Image (cartoon, rainbow, N blue to C red; front, side, top):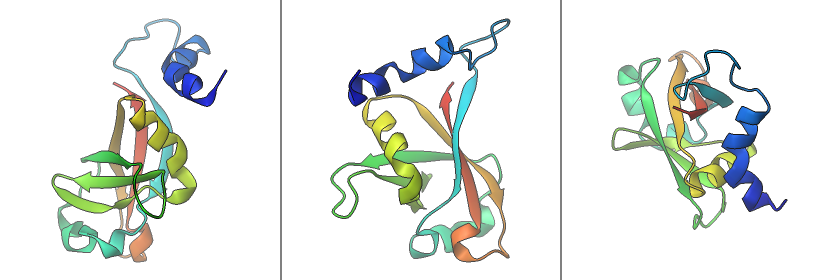
Length: 129
């Protein structure tokens, strides 16, 4: 199976492998894909918005396949403000899923104003509803 075909079939494969509970499974469940701190946080709107960022806040992921430095770049936005990027070490699968039209949810998992800037906001990415 080619990579693109695998990514396209990934949601069905996860269900078939039993990622969702067999009994009582609903389409509203989601699967945790990754957790990470926001890359480049201090270079975008993040530091200025830190007092307003709350645990559970919904973030928007935007694949940027034409980014000049990383074809798998995925920007992270809160409302209309860019907070930074998915770290390069974690962005390939997220970028591919987004480009295939797979719905992903991103939310803030932790906010720590006392941490170093690149660890002040941790997020999680989930697939599903």
